[in-house]
Length: 120
Image (tube, rainbow, N blue to C red; front, side):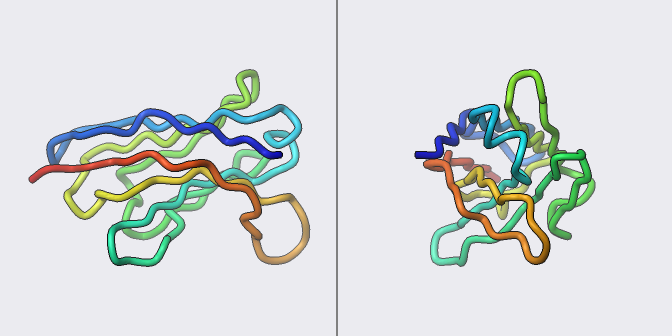
């Protein structure tokens, strides 16, 4: 069973920062694109950012310039640094893994989620 273990969520005021972490196995980390998604109450889950095995990053327009995704190959961990947080960033944030293969990313493994709450 694939394990993705998130940490780092919490309550922060608008304009503040948080860093989320997602630890997994070396096998998963080495052969998967890693991503962060979020789901706010009453809304569909949306992709926030992802990073390929080679380190190429991609961000949702809503977080560009504020969030940074990175991966630490030595620790098999992916991070999401979130700066200048806004109340609309409030959501449960999920780490996910998509096997590297041609075509559309298929997010096949998910973490349990971590709550991020931004107060105004």
